[in-house]
Image 1 (cartoon, rainbow, N blue to C red):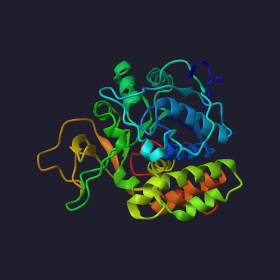
Image 2 (image 1 turned 90 degrees about the vertical axis):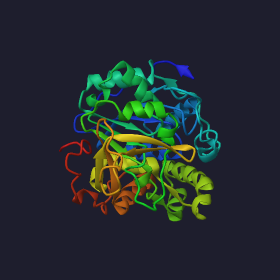
Image 3 (image 1 turned 180 degrees about the vertical axis):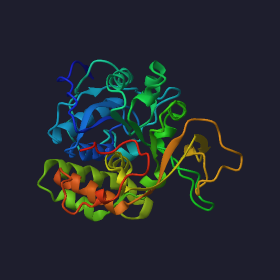
Image 4 (image 1 turned 45 degrees about the horizontal axis):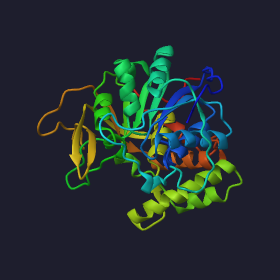
Length: 358
């Protein structure tokens, strides 16, 4: 992987939502990037890469490929951790393909990485614009934990930290226990991140809600039928995603885990319910259940509430509004959609991020 200066880092533009994305760029991560890149009121200042859905080198190649197909190549890419703080990296090639994009044969040259590590960049950008940037982790939390070693107050310096990971509160009796790969891939990092000081600005978009963000067969067909190169690409990798997910339901459908988190980051008015509390960690069925330490109805756990800073878990979502915005952005490269009515609601009280004020 080349280590050289990329084109000059973008100058933050007034009136836009400033975002830094930390990603293990697999299929749903690529869809998230395409969604955010389509927003006229969003500016991605930088992208940090991490292992998980693929190796970290492939994550960087995939970021550059997505930026190219979206015709926005000027965003700097920073190389991140190749594995967890303890143990070996777990790579989900069986879901995302060996290249992270479904093994559809895309030519992805090594990009020129910006100078410095992902962790160094996170510390630098947060301190340069305190309280103004939204951090959006979509993979294992290793880069964030390493940045916390350099600046223990890092999370307080972002406007928000919207994490695709965890599983919400404890499930109702008789419901399935949900886990997620992102926190399971580096438990040490997850404990450090969810245990770090924050300003009530850490949002957990967990598998309790992302599992319901289902993209059905007609979405793949719509994207594949498009004349827009980025839309066809989105359809091709979505079709590859379904090679794995069809065995979950017997249909070629899949959940937009990262996509839902990105729409919530940008348009939090689609959130209909949340619960807030400290986070705990329970090994479960070979994975890790990372949960806000409350019952499904918001009551304290039978053994009491652990100490720790509060995280807000999303527990309810308007999936119709999500799909309308997300699919329109992937299919047409914009969300200037006359049928979009997500803005008729306001975000939950005290929500730390979303579109900038007019």
